[in-house]
Length: 466
Image 1 (tube, rainbow, N blue to C red):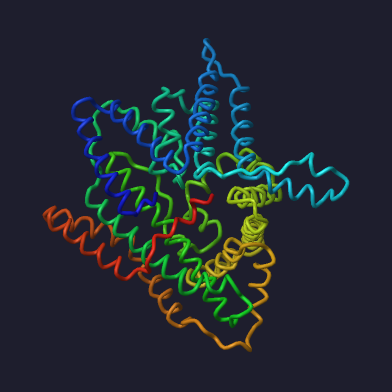
Image 2 (image 1 turned 90 degrees about the vertical axis):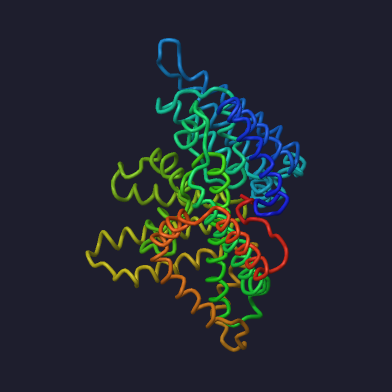
């Protein structure tokens, strides 16, 4: 079910009525019970087997977390280690088994019996990467003493909270559990911001992301050899905007849903294409994942404690792991390696030279580097990615795309992005002064206009596949 579909909107409004009615009469714990049932029902709507897996995973993780603390207050390590191993094995089975099977068969060839490595017809559960990382973070924080084992209800809800279940943001225990365990009845948070987030999500996902995919991205990536080099450059830029609008649009709508439930979720984007370096980019893009990789991969590997070169290796390895997390295709590994090498080169430049590029030039170079990396992320496989990059030498084919319009739009967006962080709070403040009926009318009018401007159909969110 699509978060921006009419069906979801109608069901969510009916659920909200019951949720707030129950809160008035019975308090937040009753709301949590209803919220957990709704989250499980929502997840089961994709496939009932996904729900069985999620409940089993939750019970194992929460059960092991309950074994961490001894009666004397000291902490056992083995439940955390066992839980991490089981969580990663579960993720590996569903997401990576066939990839490693094919790779091993390719390496060993006829030296092994193919029957010893059976082909498994495995359906990838939607959102498994996100709730796995959420569960691992919970276990680690309990093991470190930063988090007490949660009650079963709130613990299950932490892993199954439906606004963030399918594609994040990845909620840490500190992000969600205090809000779920708060005994007072919740209230809707920042209602004016909710309307702006919904309009933002519609513009980004229903209109802009879909339009960019239809006009620029899909045709060029389907057959790169048929397009001029400047068309390929336009397509790579268009995909950079498409994936940003798609994923940040998703984040906007689930943030709005959570605020309607009286819950805040972590910020996941801070104008990433205004970044003036790769390290700055990863502090702005998919923040919940990049901070998870930093805290639970990069720092445990040694972080910056083992000397300068060891720090570069840790950063490189962390980015490769980030690439592998996104999928089994070799293109994701190369994408992670691309960013890892870029971070190392950036750090070498800073170590060897005290010169700093002007901000506008640094932003432009970072954006170009990120766009080239997105080519690997978007390509179906490595041969198609190589074909796309080789196409930058194709100057004899006539250009077919409106690259000038895309370039002008990109420049305008860069200019407007600088003011957006101040503009949104200003607009929210102005909406407070308008009667709720006029706000509803404005949101409805904007929705109808966006639907008319957008391409037909309801495409899925890109990150549902991860």
